[in-house]
Image (cartoon, rainbow, N blue to C red):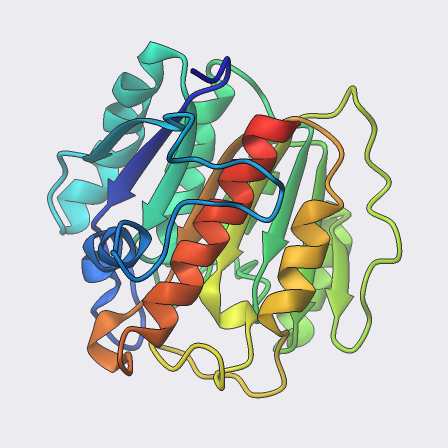
Length: 267
């Protein structure tokens, strides 16, 4: 039995999506591929999540997929975290990251958030909504929920979002620029937020916002494996099964879950 245990927590919510709905169906699609007989739970970190009983619990938050439901996310996530396991959340659209990080901060504040995405999600508001899936990191930085925000894979940063990044001191890596060294120490605590549209859509057709020129699966695995500080929480978001082809994107999401979970245990 592992000393560190992970709770795999679905957040079936997409009421803050600006273009297409469908990510609320993401948690079940990821779990289907994660526990499929077509693969196993071995992580490239060397951790076999199956043989060591790595997932303490596999549940969905009990929330409504509505505007009212958004206000339930932090409360229900906090309740789920009371057992002390490391949370790995499955989205859901990216709006969920703000209330999830707020819930994590109540027990263990991340000094660093590593955010993989095609978009900075730093809008002050989007379509008259300050809590849109285009805004979570503006809210996180306004509330000082972390000391450093590192954004990787960005390729849609308009003037407003670049100004926001400068205002909040965000370490913004716009492709083709990539971080040579994340500058982490063993004293840091890390939260990972991985939006699947960080990948080139050739790898992930099942997302709402196709943004060509993205990272490869191997690129992202390499960065995750180089994280040398404790990972205290993570989310994998924006899978849209309605657009997926033969479960390709869900399979990539499941792979990311395994590699992040492996590092949660190994670190």
